[in-house]
Length: 313
Image (cartoon, rainbow, N blue to C red; front, side):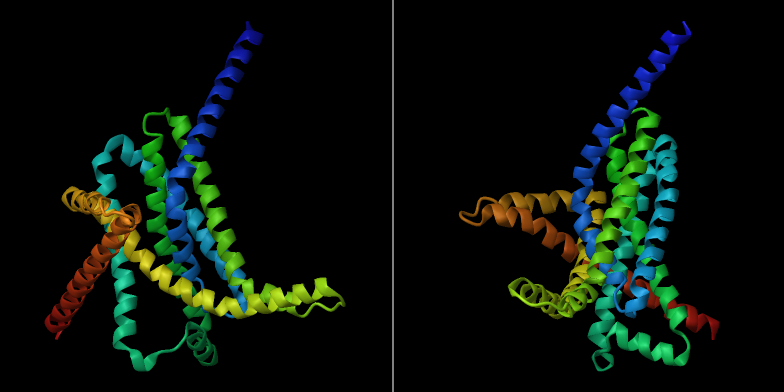
């Protein structure tokens, strides 16, 4: 009897592991669409540091991301079990935060043209003033806050896939996706921020022959491309804030989401470029919605701040 019970237990465990593997695969495909935005946003957030601080900063944000997910996974399971209607409002608040953060950066750049300095210059000035550590901690904290919203979206998407599964499968799948996504995103971020160092290393290799010449040329290309890639990631990261935030808001407000889908369907009838427009238009409209939402939130915060200041005086 004991042997039969053990075999039954092992069979149940194997069945659960099969379910977890299948659900994890489906969830990974579903959340892969978020990975690009997540990568661009986080790579943008950790740029501007001195070379020797880049990997420690990425590691600090990665640990913060794991803490975020350690909070979000049990919270999502509890909310899904007891107050499932609360998931979307909370996610929309996160979307509004992303829109606000993106628009605040955009507004600051537009209204402070004379103060156009790179993050590296700002860091150097702070270093001379002895405030680099505090600046670095603020940057890390901001990156972790942004990661919280993106992690929440990944967790909610995964939860939707495993909603009908048993608790063990739900928990295991969410945990696997949380770890895999964190490792994947911040592993790629680390590779991106160290791209110039890799290029410099290759460009300085000594040796004769065609192969070594190719290695040095590749290194020089990487050194040349790294600053341009960082600037591109800054632009893409800000745009991703609007696209992700606007997408969350559109998904939460059914009328807006339905209108965007209708526009996409309408342009799909355009001969030749219809299919391309059908894919791009929802993304562009989500970004526009994100910009509008961010402007409204920034305006409300500014008005509230002025009223608070007037009352205090």
